[in-house]
Length: 233
Image (cartoon, rainbow, N blue to C red; front, side):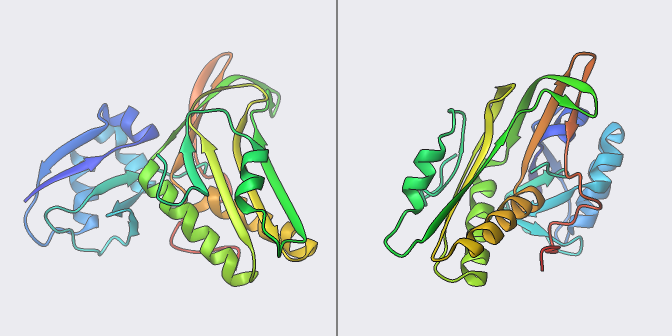
């Protein structure tokens, strides 16, 4: 069967492709596909070993069997297009906290908390010139909605909205905005922190820090990356 795989961020750079088509037999698993790609792209082998694969916008276990027609993507460790739900978006436009507040405001909310992530200039003494963000938009929006569902289950009555910007961002520009509206203020702090931590863990968004003396793709920086587990539980 003919399989087409989408590459993102560091994997795309190492492989020299954004998309690649390969022939594999029926019954091929994600592990088989990983091994095949590592053989084809030895310069990307180490990063492929650390990456997860998605099948039809869902993270897949290595033993998952791939079928003809599946939508496949390699998801390198994440930092962290509009979907049907306007509360969740990937955009190239500047972000507005006020816009997200409007999306979650409701008569039952006693507190609305916003989190705004911005581009900082210095990290461990190294000067950043600008950042570049990339995403797998369709899957990113879907995972944002899943995070909101988790939050609404843990903190009933909570409304959640998330926006993440992609493309080139200059120092002090907002890269992500999250708004949570809850009946009581304590839950807003807890739900807000949960939202940003889960976004960094499972939403396929990558950032490339461009420094004065070079650049490097950045992924998950909180220990071993596994989007199939929830460390917040």
